[in-house]
Amino acid sequence: MEAGIVGLPNIGKSTLFNALAGAQQEAGNFPFATTEPHASTVHVPDPRLELIRRHIETKKVIPATLQLVDMPALVRGASEGEGMGNKFLAEIRNVDALVHVVRSFADGDVPHVDDSVDPMRDIETIDLELIAADAQIVANAMDKAEKLARFNDKEAVARLEALRKCGAVLEELQPVRSAGLTAEESFAVRSFAFLTEKPVLYVANVDEDEVGTAADPMQSAPVQRLAAHAAEQGGQAVAVCAKLEAELSELDEDDRAEMLTSLGLDEPALATVARAIYRLLDLQSFFTAGPKEIRAWPVRIGSSAPQAAGVIHSDFERGFIRAEIYHVDDLAELKTEHAIKEAGKLRKEGKNYVVQDGDVCHFLFNV
Image 1 (cartoon, helix red, strand yellow):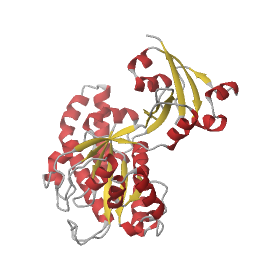
Image 2 (tube, one colour):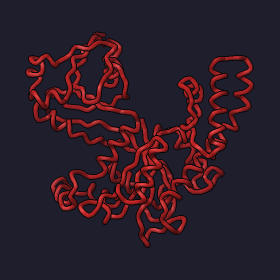
Image 3 (spheres, one colour):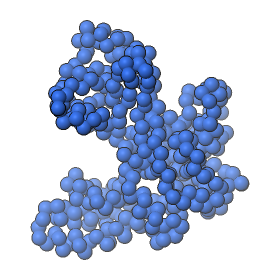
């Protein structure tokens, strides 16, 4: 599962990516400092890992991860080939979700492509380009879809109906996600990878003085408008200062803790961003715990116990017998796995069990 960071030039995309990924991609104050997609594996901070470690002795602790891709900047007219244009649009179709970074800071040394800071205008610019690109995909696909549907093939008929629904909302300058596609229709058009069907996390990149003890950036008027727009789109919104987060990411643990304390923060805002992206990808974590390692594993929400076992190794899913499961909250309360078992909270679950966020699992299998 991958999330792609998108936005206009000079809004802090690569700075945010560098801080999240611990990478060092070029982050320049000029358009198209990023000209190729850059991918990195990002850790998802989870305080429950430390809770488990306090009660179960282990050699190492491994957090869940997600794939993050820093995409080249998008500009007005990209759907018609401007800027990185078609290359950008082709690359972004490969990701599962979008992290749309929006500039909400003023800095005379970092020029804005439209000469002024206006987050909602910038969102509209990106949205319209993605809508135009999807509309072109629909237009190109309609003729073939109509021909195939004449043979009454079930999937072909569903594809044609879905394309008509998508075309109708795109014509109204609305995203595909608002088309109300059925599960069958969504499956029929999955190969088109519509850009405006992907879930979106909006990240407001704010000034340094809007972060910490002085203010809550989520309460500022521009960010409130952004959050309202995100809610309308079925997405989420967070606010960070990418410049500050980049500085924090370069400090050692003690200096980082001292700086966070001085700002009145419990953790870097990047932890909030990483967890928000994780949720955006419809992921949750289950845990395995033992003397060799304690590990958080990403799994799609709604996954069965065998599917979760398969995340660890395909043999676990193929030969699944049962899972012995308790919740991390049980460990917080009872302190040991032995006490959990004695209290009757170690459950034996079969193939139909739906794994829950925070489950600690021991899988039994035979191949």
